[in-house]
Image (cartoon, rainbow, N blue to C red; front, side, top):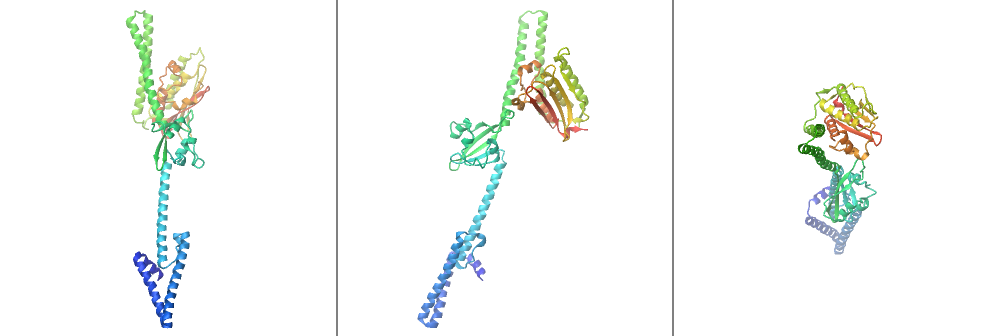
Length: 455
């Protein structure tokens, strides 16, 4: 009955509930007063009314005490079993607590989902309080700035990122909307650049965003260098040709001297033609779809052709009467590659010719194919040249990028050979690999995926 009464009372509004409560109170007084009157007359009636009032007030006080004791540490799962007004109050408080806790759980779940989404972002996110102290940071930001989320919490960001440009940006000096910093993982072999932005929110708080722009910075530098290099590479032979043409037009020259000038003009014309051919080759490689898997390239015949060309170039640069180079070509591979024979020959020949040009007299060059454990294949060209400094390795394969420009021009290089080799490797599901030790030599390799190997 009490459970049914509680259910019914929950549907009553406060006014109805108070009327019922007053009705029960008055009814109990009347009943007890009537019983007292029958027993002792008017004195008994007064005593009955007083006893009923006292009993109801005592019962109400006991319920209130149990309710207040429960309120000190309310638990929606163990609400007190009370009747009357205190039972209604306990029921409503329990329901409110359950709704509040469910809302808190929903908010916590949404916050966890939000933080998980920020953690998954490749950009760094740091929440700063009004004093520029770190309140929270995601994994990307920890990696960008070398932060420890527990050790560095509530540390001033200016104590951890000490670059002057960032200090000025944090203090609001200047009109910059972002600042570019050197990443904590920056090395000479792999430069890292970060773009950092600050956005105000809340009560003086700031959101700090960091983004790795290394690739964009490198692409922008490559674009600028490419335009400058193309202009420079073409300007030099054009200037020489213009000077020779003016000389031939204005001065009477003897036949031997005239022939020498014409030979020099032909050499510079050939250089410009090689530059243009290289640029056209790169444009074709970038603008055409990758070669399919139907055509199989006979590596034995291809390597024989590359070896003949390499030995001829080596004999021209370092005659036998001088200190000739030692060219060692391993046995032809017993497998084939799927792809374009012309592209592969161009890439392999560029690697071997570079090794011949930059290896001094008496040096050694080793060329060999090998199968990789994953089923792929790798061509390595190892030389005993002067080697490459670590800071140059990340830029190997860029158009016109040369470590020693003067020596490159003397050897007849255009600065496009490695760029062509890199693009050919990528078009054949492979990559250009470079390792070098300064003063000891270098190893340039083309690694191809297993899906391109046949046999």
